[in-house]
Image 1 (cartoon, helix red, strand yellow):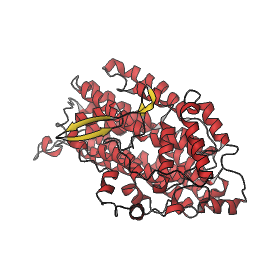
Image 2 (tube, rainbow, N blue to C red):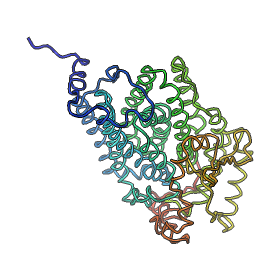
Image 3 (tube, helix red, strand yellow):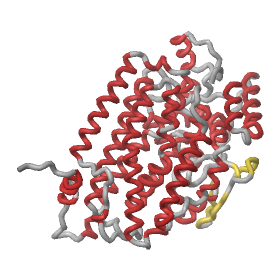
Image 4 (tube, rainbow, N blue to C red):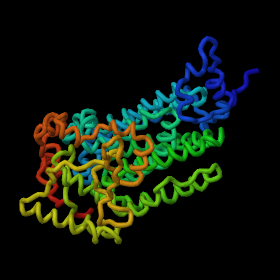
Amino acid sequence: MNRKMPLREKYLRLTRDLDWEPSYRSREEIYPQMAFEGIRVTDWDRWEDPFRMTIDAYWKLQAEKERRLYAVIDAFAQNNGHLTLSDARYLSAVKLFLTGITPGEYNAHRGFAMAGRQFAGAGTRAACQIQAVDELRHAQTQIHAMSHYNKYFNGMNDFTHSNERIWYLSVPKSFFQDALSAGPFEYVVAICFSFEYVLTNLIFMPFMSGAAYNGDMATVTFGFSAQSDEARHMTLGLEVIKFLLEQHPDNVPIIQGWIDKWFWRGYRVLTLVAAMMDYMLPKRVMSWAEAWEMYFEQSGAALFEDLARYGIRMPKYWEHTVSGKHHISHQAWNALYNYGFAAAFHTWVPGDDELDWLSKKYPESFDRYYRPTLEWKRRQQVQGRRFINPVLPTLCQICQVPMIFTEPDDPTTICVRTSVYRDERYTFCSDGCKDIFDHEPEKYVQAWMPTHQVNMGHCGGTTIDEVLAWYHIDGQRDGMDYEGSEDQRHWKEWTGSGKKDGEAA
């Protein structure tokens, strides 16, 4: 009599039962990276995938999601969905997403493929294989969804080239390259837990809601399609942490150090997302501060309360993010505006309605510290003296963000930290970045710093025009001000829109 195989038994047969003990090579030779990070695993069979996902079930699930996703993307393109957007300014956020976040998805795919090869446990190898395919799918669907906009708007035609060269994209790129050059255990803590579980909701929830609110159904559809995968990734991330913590007490301080590091590194990458949410969405759903409170301070705090029984505390310097949530989006937007001539998206000074919205959302900081600067920049622009900063900024050696952040307890003072290593002085934007460098200086002295490379003539030359040509940025066409740009002119022609930017935001 044939019986239906229970899911757990099927999962075990398709993972554990496909493994074998090596006979002519030692496990140390086959998995050479298992020991050097100091993590001790006593029983690989205790690893449990909470979804018990098998490859055959995975392909069926993803195939159905693909059919639904591409039906929406095709309908969006066939019905000129780009004309349903709230305003073409919104596309600056899409350009930043495509050039900054999508290549990160591809690098995550590479990372899980490499980590899976190094794990001695069959269950963990299967989980890494599935997540590697997930991340590759995310990159592909994002590219496909946003390719429609590339037919009509500038700044998206060379996104892989942009990611490799443009200065602000070194921020997310350095994050993933840092993870890729770590060991397999650190990689899964960095991506599966710190990024996927603690921080990824801040990309795929409030921003995707903003995409829907601004009429971008192609982006929101791939976002929510990916989010169903992210929910599985977050559960796996928590399982990874608990599995490692339960294996041996010596693992606890190592993992705590990785959580501290990767939380801070991820937080700095999200500076770009903060600017997207507060400044690039013509119609806004919530502020960056509200999103941070909801998705980290509330959800994250509950998570770390649960992990406290293993000896894990909140990430180091998390309290700096609580004060920083009132400032980082404004500081980032000011920097992007100042260097807008070297960006592959448009910037602008917010209209009065938008400034009022920011004043309401940031009552303790915006009017006092940031509104006067933005209003001054608008007056300068009206008078034909649009402000730009032609001086190369100092970058943080770790996160590679220009030195724009202020002291946690003083918004009027730029935060600068330094360390000396082998007679060379290195600069950092925060205590968190300085700690990361001091722990592994040999790794970070090798960082490819965009401003240093420009000064040495390695970026096409030493003049602005030469560097922009090396970036493949076409001046006013791709970057600088939205007002008067080709994107704006086309948008007004297609929609008959005469509305001033910033009205009814």
